[in-house]
Image (cartoon, rainbow, N blue to C red; front, side, top):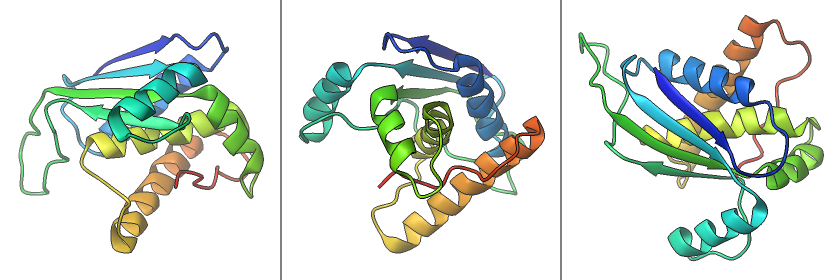
Length: 165
């Protein structure tokens, strides 16, 4: 799996954890090991510009996903998943830090960025949360991936509760 993490935010973030959880999520979703993903960490001003340009919404947001080849998780009947360019995930640590503090479980900026990375991966794979049933599926899968990764890493304490709306 080729995953690039590029921190352009000026904020120190745990880039290795972002890389690790993205790799874990893609493996768990059975995405071809030669597929490619880019994760870009930007400041609030850059995220606000993207948010306005692509969503026509004011202010910075926590995560945005820009799919390329529209890869989907393979069905159980598929022998080999297709490979390709997944796309870009853009994260904003300033928003993540605020959301982490406001979350009911209260967690760190890095924990929030890990959760948002999984959220972004799922969006790249076609998951959405506009409808209640879609939201239940996506957020359930997101929690399972984050919990699985945390257990594999031996991390203790409660997993971050979803703060993405």
